[in-house]
Image (cartoon, one colour):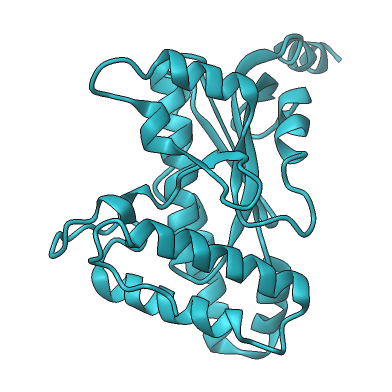
Length: 246
């Protein structure tokens, strides 16, 4: 009983942190297909590895990462370093999963949470998960308070607001600009993160185009890929180096 009491005491208070909730779309059907295919099982294994690497928990910096089923939760301290950690972790994870043709949807908020090495819960997690609305585009929305903090930390050379935030062209919602590395791409610039290499980007662009015209997909899923195609093309058009999806 005494050990249980000590354990409860550890969860006595929430902490206000940045919280990201990421839902990997289509992961359930992805894993079901793997039941009958060795190749698909290898793809699932690769996807799981991409979920975890390289954004591992770092208790010394107050950064935690938890993956359960088809969801990933990150939390970070409310300071400029924590803000950058959550933005880079969410962006990098989405890019890693796009590399195995999986779309991601979710949100980043500022809220109260308990997030340890084994347990995560709290109103901040619930609020972030609410951005994962069925049928909505594969985007990571940003709460009003996160946007305010981004604006506060956007003076001088390191303008986090302009780097990490874009408006969804459909409804103008502020979302995480997770394709920013593709926007920055200069050509012939080796980088193992996400889709930045030209061959990986070209392959992704072609796959997106295939999905947009795939009549075997239901209307909701096709809309997600059409949205991704528009976002991709608007991003890579800026410098015209990476391949458009057509």
